[in-house]
Length: 374
Image (cartoon, rainbow, N blue to C red; front, side):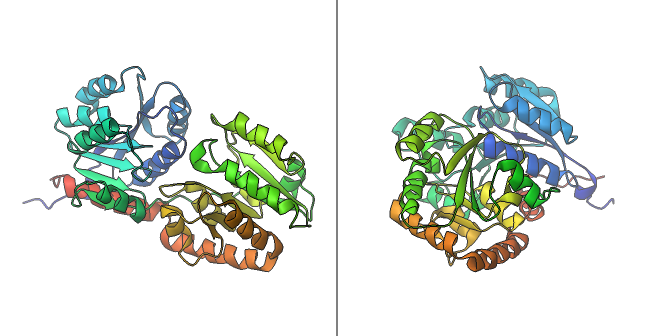
């Protein structure tokens, strides 16, 4: 009798989202797809509009198979695709809990195992949305959350404990090949200035307004030169730009828009700031840790799991004074910044690599797939 050969047979796995603004979800899917290629044949599916085409192009450039989903009816598009795709499992990714329901239904109708990753904690307050989510989860075999805190939020919302598995986010280390001084020169940063960096979509969740109010408090506290670069785009950008003008911070805050060279920006930066009100487990924090850049963030869910409960600079979410205190301490103590950067770099390698995330995800898949016999 032949021995089981699960590892020898590369089953096709669909990694799919219907989010029109995939951002961090899309980055996660690319990382996961690349990391799974030793064990499976991943096929990445994104909508054919919004942010989807850019991620489809990037996946193709990485040598992965892709599928564009018609945005006007992604459930029907997935159903049509699944009939001939030869998939063994569908892994749905939801940026927020109202996304992905139709994708899961289509996969279930094809009698395929369905895994769903929730990239944020449970934040639904509308009763209809809560009901729709509960109905969709009934059709899912496993729910992966990107942090233990997010898993707890779904359990508290009434999801079956047996379905939920926490697989903390992980990333591949991305290192800039540029010289730090050269990068800072291109950005117009003075040699003695402390460069602060925030990479986040301009949405209320990310806490830009709180950060700017805290930055205004620093004007009267911190004498040294510093500059904040805001990277990203989104619906709140004009509002945040107006706030910068109202607070008189134009000489200290710059908007860079969407950037693909975040690794270079991290190389130039002295401190990363993420003032979010809620998160799953933010990739930018992991990127900062992998690059050896210290982080000021908020004491929320997965962010705290990434940085550690004892991290020195965890402000209370939405608390301007708390954030200003953390920033003041970080700006004024270069030695502390260096020590924390080293600690976070080691913590990243110990706990938050893409290889670890992929191995734990493979374990979830294997729990749902029959052994394949050669």
